[in-house]
Image (cartoon, rainbow, N blue to C red; front, side, top):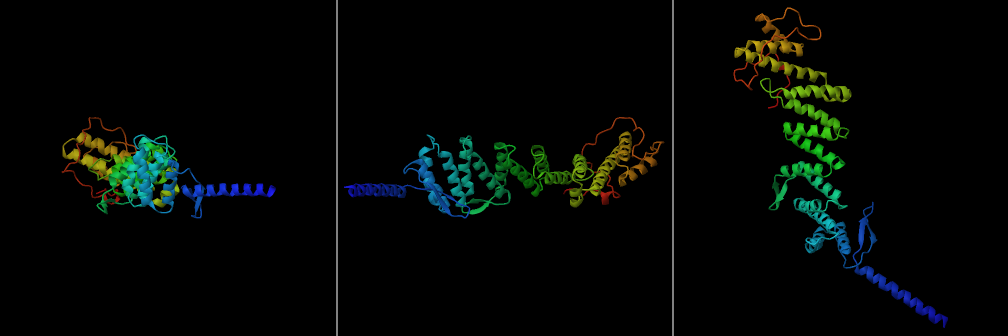
Length: 367
């Protein structure tokens, strides 16, 4: 009798094992890629559930079958889009990933935006922001948007918008830092120096110890100089450049010497500022405003005593009998400036006199 009981028990165990095996075969399994690139089974969710559907979509993506994954996810999203579902955020994320795998990254942005706008508390929120950032970086690097089967549509505006949104959605984060420097570089590479300068300023304000701070400081100086169009134009960019250049040389002397942002460039900036003052003084002379001309020439010699323009200013002062009785001291300071109201110069003057002697040492204007 004992063998008979044992036989029935063994049959029961075998029957139960068979049922479990059949159940596992009928359910989609959840997989992940191990470090070697091999699919590793994690567990088998209950068949027919949303969890099983999402796991099936992940498996299809891992097997490089994005079109099938997209179809599976589209059915789920259409069914639960209005009522909502706990797996809906992940469904949007996975469908966006499937579209990227199908080389349709612009369409994927609609799914990522649905995730980011509707499910801000989702665990997949940061992943969605990182996906959009990767698309933005590709567009910023020159990738065109696919339209009518070809990549020809300009993507610049989309790149800028995505880079700004990344910083707004995750401020002070590593993703925001990457987006911030990428946006500044985007404007710099396209020679939009005004926006590049603003962007590098913002980077240094938001990430003063960021990994790209030295690069941002260097490029900010270069944008300041590039915005100077010549002695007849506004020199505020050069004034900023001098301040930032002195700060950079003090903080990073080795990097300054290696990159050419050194004392020699500081001298060139000084020459350009002096040339701008000399041009302003000559304009005042031509318009008959001698008090303003004298004030500007004396200021030029005081602020830029070692420049070529300072020597030219001295010649003008001497020829008109405006030289102060006391010489300029060793620090480049002159005696009291002449009194009188200074007439501001209203922009560029077509009759302004050029400065041939200072041109060789002046910072080259941006065309």
